[in-house]
Length: 122
Image (cartoon, rainbow, N blue to C red):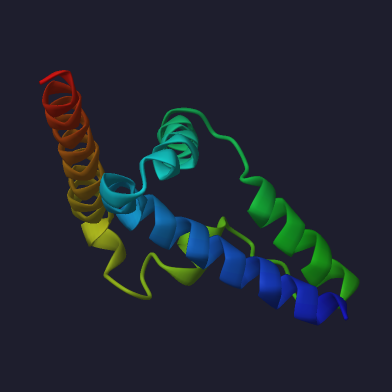
């Protein structure tokens, strides 16, 4: 059961990262989505600035240990993404591109929100 839970947490972690990337665009249509998206974005920025361990990584490590599986050894990103989906040497570039996508989604949300407010005043 612990192995299943470790994999479930890993899949949830991937889902959170996917939401971080595209959630701001979802907020263009469903405005309430922006609040959890901003919270996850704030966590992502904090984790870049301060060495903090993601609670999902901690949960996966716990369940891996319970199942007798080897630890990740590094963080989630380092274990599953860096050097797997792109070369480790491109890490900074990938972070800048992905961060730019998130910022574009936020700018688009803000612009759409302002336009909707202007229309509602008319």
